[in-house]
Image 1 (cartoon, one colour):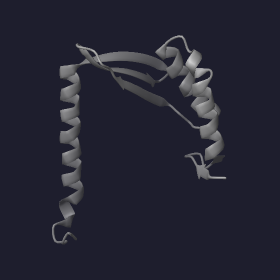
Image 2: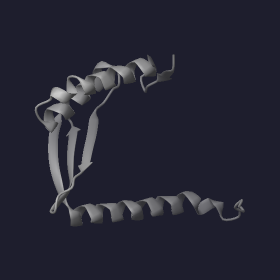
Image 3: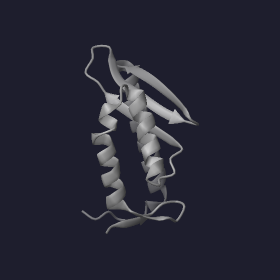
Length: 118
């Protein structure tokens, strides 16, 4: 039995909880009439198995000539849905890459005197 501790220091059986979540996705989750119902049900299921979820984010890259991505988010109990155009999605990816490079530079700032192993 593989176990883990969550933030509340509650030990849980990772295999059993992941199996329960997968079973929900393949049964009740498949019967959800809309994506919104699925997202709400998934968040509820995470809480039922013992994960203290306050926010959840789902995104799907879609094959469409105008829309590139659809996003569903639950925060403070409110479900929002957004669609991004291909331009918005590309700009978002570029911002993420820039932000990632910034944090890598910041992380490595104090390591100038060290040699890299090759």
